[in-house]
Image (tube, rainbow, N blue to C red; front, side):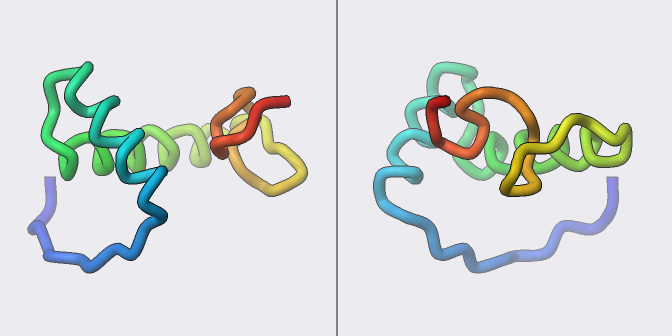
Length: 67
């Protein structure tokens, strides 16, 4: 793993609360959960995973929207 750099993130309150709950459920810190999700998304991108109309992962609800 490379050198860690601090990074300021502005995020919607509702999204932040959901991420906190998800992190707690998976016994991760909020920062660890965000990094985990970003790494997973990058792996999927490198593998050429399915894309939605928005250009994101093709999983239902992955962009916070239900189909």
